[in-house]
Length: 543
Picture 1 (cartoon, rainbow, N blue to C red):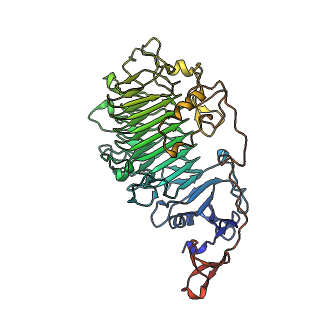
Picture 2: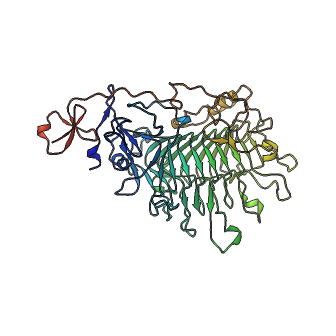
Picture 3: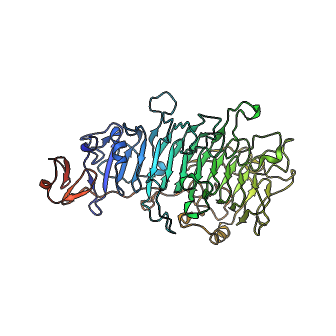
């Protein structure tokens, strides 16, 4: 019945089906334009039944899920763009997302401050688990795009690794200018918990210019995101099962693992490992480019990020700031405050700043910011990394190089104070917050790019742009390591840049023939069809 109220907005050239929504709806409420936007309570069911290629445009404001399921189902191949202002007219979708608002999907459906999706992820994206395992495993799927949506207040209470907000299963998804806020899976502290704001199973997920703040998971394994293999199988060794997760120009702040187990008083506050993010054993490949990861909390072993066995990760021009291990009794077992890389992992570093500790009596050189767990792990560096102490147990060829700044003594160790001074995390003109270094941590971006070009980077990651910083400012010739260049040049508005403005949609036009409300072609003769609601020449017809 909800779908019967909607007609179609068609592009004259490609006949793409487009729907327009606003929180309260407007005009005819038929979704054909901003003046006739469909109301928010129609979005959930319409989106769940969408076909690949359909596009959905949302004015900023709050949206509730499908009333039948109290959750969001987002099929593969659709485009969902939110945050448009109330000044939009016609079928115009040209808008600078970098300056835009947000459309909000909150799991707090009853307004009591607690998420209501207790037994499932609030948002599901995928098509089940495909059987094909070809070399083009991801590229054959129809990509889903999501822009300008805030996903918040998820609260998932069991330990099945389904995500406390967004669960991506066997899908290819790009998120742009989205926010993941206040998502929580600490309902059962004695279970493993381990549900990130985004849970990624056997999928290819890319996040650009996104913000992850104040997300919590019980006990361990990544409160902002967790990457797992197909069917969550951490024992698989088939590369076709692995996920690919890519994050560029993203901010991660105050993402923690929380633990209320009372048998060990010191552990009553922080969970065990992987505070902000985690790639599980055999989970796949991670890329982080021009990101800030700060203020994470957990007990030990990768407060910022934990990489499991047989994983691969690339860290390029990131800033890891204030992610100290909370375990104080056995300092040597902290195993990496910024990054802990597990057995047989493969990690790549270029132009990062990763410092966590102030100099004090409790600091020792055995407190590694980066911890490489065993001899079979591999490390490669393109140089210009600025780090606190590193424990590298790898015996493989490669490792950190001469242009990396990694002191080993307490007297010369890089600290937050020495690299950032009194500077604090704040908005510096971009979409997300970042912190500015004060030290001379110069980086030759061309030299870094040349080495990165030799790394075995997957096609999904070839979009990375090292000439820009986290704010999308163009790096100066005297650029610096980390995600922020104090001398960067702000971008100009550019209609040809999809991050600044999206092209206009052409005026609506009719197609010949008879179509269902979801755009399925049903033939040329409406008289040959049963009673129902159809679209003929761009108009809704009730037969």
